[in-house]
Length: 156
Image (cartoon, rainbow, N blue to C red; front, side, top):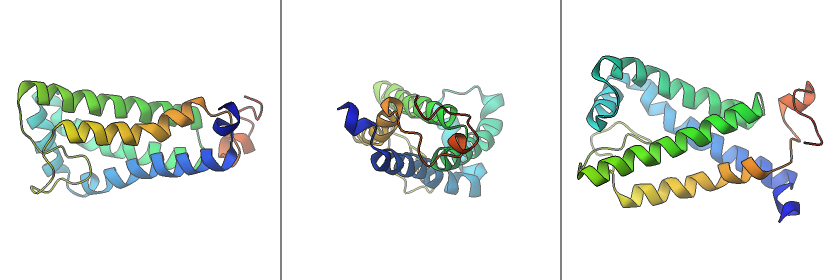
């Protein structure tokens, strides 16, 4: 298992998938901040006075961290941030499922035809979580900008 997790190609593939998911998820939110703010408000997890700033900052954070993960810049930090965001998203959907709220998830699109939150979204998010967890246990830092500038030890 350790050999599989240290495979440079698998690690690169996981970086591309996990980072790409967040970049893709951020694009529609960045392009339509007002609609995304409405979705954030409907979750009832962010205080009303912070909804707009949250709706502006979250998609940019997703985009930048996804890009950094793919290129391997501030690799550990971007990986950990995206793993944390994944966990927070699962909890946010789960809280609303438990509350019985049927809302637009806002995961990949802010359009009114977006999927409604539910158990299938939680399962989907867990599938998206897999490449991130694999990165957490990977010992490969090949093809990262951090390694080029010795910010990440090649042996760690």
